Length: 404
Image (cartoon, rainbow, N blue to C red; front, side, top):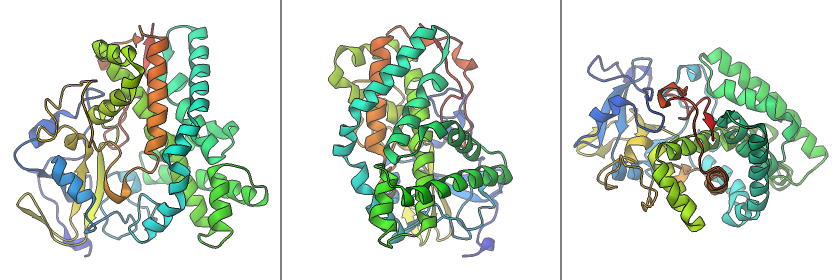
């Protein structure tokens, strides 16, 4: 496979990704991609054609198929966001590598993200959420739910879990925001360099003065025993720190917004605390904060009667899989009582989100407590005035003005 293995598809294949106009609904163009075929042709910013997988069953099968690669370092791995086009073969641990490297890295971390450990931190999460809401209520309306609540919940939680000083949160939140939302590769590289340098120093400090966070455990178990080197430890820390708060910030904000726009569904959440986990699962399905996953075919693969050829770019649409009428009745309806099992909000297959147990705990506590304490929470601006993130980012509001 070389750079000449693909050609622009021309005007018949629409551009991808596309921006949402409603925060919790797919982009309008997605309507035409929901048809009889489980895949469609789209065009990336550089003119490269790509297959967009829209079917729930087909997407799950492909995400578990070893013939699809997640290796960001491959010279023709698809580039969806222009800021990453000059990544220079840099492969991020866990999310941008294939087995066996991926499996080795994941095994190092699985013990730290188990259900038992996540349940153990629920009391501290509850205390954190209560403090944030105390502060927000004391200041009174109007509040930005993103900066006052949705951002600090996962940010504080991942700092505590990893053993990262929360006093540095403004710095790494800014670096993470600049890295994920950069308009150019130069801006992304600059943000990455600052964050890498910070974590490089933190890992070195933890080697000299161990603490009790996940990074300290990783260093003690793996780095000191020679299972990974300093650079890999830093890169794993970077991925966990960014991923550990970036998507969950959006999920909390977008979940709150969706509930505010469906006030009758809030009653389901308030009527029975045991219903909260089910409401969260339906929100994960309905909102699909992570809109798509990027892969490259290593071999020819038959999908819905079409051959995806080796070297082809493959984009698995989380949004459209979660809105597939073959998988869910009335998929465009937000139903807090729905059994939303098998949604792919956390992905599927070997790359399924490692931190999903933490994210679920954060969402259940944050949203359950938010509407229990402020059942009359509502938007302070019209829905179409809520500023949204671009289609190539994790989906969610940039700011969320609320009142009560």
